[in-house]
Amino acid sequence: MIKLYNTRTRRKEVFTPIDPDNVRMYVCGPTVYDRAHLGNARPVVVFDVLYRLLRHVYGNVTYVRNFTDVDDKINAKAAETGRHIRDITDETIKWYHEDMDALGSLRPDHEPRATGYIGPMVAMIQVLIDKGHAYVADGHVLFDVNSYDAYGALSGRRLADMRAGERVEVADYKRDPMDFVLWKPSTGDQPGWESPWGFGRPGWHIECSAMSLDLLGESFDIHGGGIDLQFPHHENEIAQSCCANPHGDFAHYWLHNEMLQVEGKKMSKSLGNFFTVHDLLEQGVPGEVIRFVLLSTHYRSPMDWTEKKVREATETLRKWRGLTEGIDPAANLSRAFVAALSDDLNTAGAIAELHRLAKAGDAAGLAAGLALLGLEDITDLGAAGSFGFVGGNTDALDAANAVARQWMDLRKSKDFDAADRLKDKAARLGVIFEVLVDKGVQQPNAKVSGAAMAQEITELLK
Image (cartoon, rainbow, N blue to C red):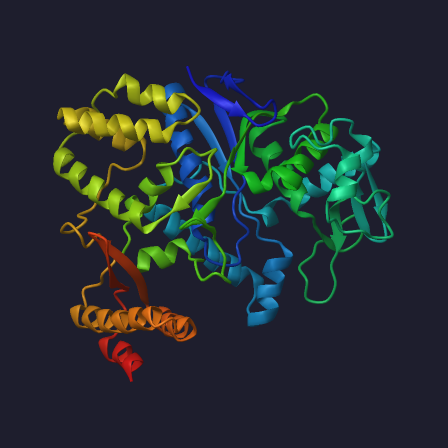
């Protein structure tokens, strides 16, 4: 029996699929204009584990995750670079697949692109207009939030409070400030398609409603995504889908993962702690280590990515690799392990059971649990203490550590501006500084990408 916390009802519920012979799940995917950052990877890994659990329990599962390949951010990227939009989206999707594959995540059964579903979006918008839930104004089509009494139920917000507290786009052609765009006009180099309302392109929210309807039907089991999508994206999806298809229930269970931090702070480019999955892989952090760290915290709790967790995960996986090497992972799963995952995807509890199995010497049970978590292909993680960050260029590592000592000296002398400048220059060369503490003594240390060159790093000392 699987229990899941349903955001819509705000309680943990027994999962009862509409059709046990075909469990259906939709997860909002990326807007494809740049590399996926670490926060983007958390829902991918979380819902991949749910997908694996559902397949273990029910057998047949249809998993859909979309690509948003028409969006103003993509348009801006094309204008900035002079590249064709399709070239940007094709390249970004390729990167996304490579990075998520490296994390051990399975490809969904369907990965629709928004641009492949313009026809169904136009059709759904027309239905909403015909039913009185949408209106045409100044070349736009907007959803009338006042036409749907349950608007705000998912996020627990009232329209009156939203109007007072939310920063929303206010336009003269909107009947209500909270009305959202279903279709908007395109001009100049902006991508667009012919429609009954003129040449234009879809709004963001209508994309997932049209794609999930086409691939999963009017009612399906699970809709997932990050907590940042709960409002307005998922709220708007519910409104337009239920109004267009009143005989369906849309998604029965709504699951949202919490946000990710880095060393206790929000990940931000301005703080210098923003990095992509590709960055970590290039620095030598194995994909299974990234996956393990992401799964070590329950998906509904904020997750803090730290260097300490990376080291601990690496050491744990190294030990488990030694225990399970050559073991067939098809052995029976531990009941306690499956019970933990079945309790609202308690991956932290499942990992605790793997520690127990390892301590008991149950290599078969350990291997089976690792396989269900997507950690069955543990690579050679190297000797203890090096956990994969360091590239094969030892000269570059020696040079980097010399610069790291200079960086530490600047910090000790409280010349933080100079220390930060040195750190930024090093980062551009593929060198990351950290402070290690051994028996209370702080020591500088450097992590080097495989592409770093000793001579270029040495120049920083001059």
